[in-house]
Image 1 (tube, rainbow, N blue to C red):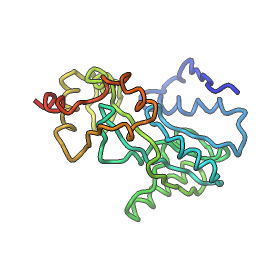
Image 2: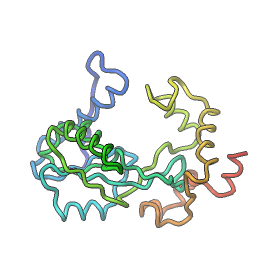
Image 3: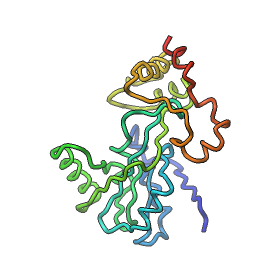
Image 4: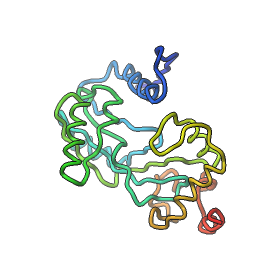
Length: 229
């Protein structure tokens, strides 16, 4: 079986702009599922979200029932491979369902994970069921992988910031290196917001075994002081 299927979108429909383009691209991928069976397991995630292999195997072995959505809780790393945020990545992230339950990929992406607070979680439950067009059961799986976001250094941060069309926490338009450094420093100045990890156990096995390939993406303790200054 071919493991990689390239789904190429030649052009967007007229009038599709901004975030709608991302949503359209996500949904366009469904053409690659034309020969999938209703009982097949579908794993959907962004490219910077890495599910833990053992977790996926456990979920598949347990089986996914009709209407169940497994929401994977990920350790979140920002700017550097070893800057681990205190907050888990759960609200959005990798989702596992049966193929027959898929409505659209964008709808699945917007199925938010269970959360604390009865009222807030009920609102999420109602919204998730509306997006999946059926009453769903969301199941949160802890310690299920990694989310590496805003990686690649200040230039990459500035490029990503400038490419985001509209966001509640970002001003529109091109971003400078100074903007990127300020954004990175705002995290590193808050010692309670992150942990600087030094062992390989907290990272995917490939990164841990080949850490020399990723040295430029690892923040050393002495660098924290330099960056802050």
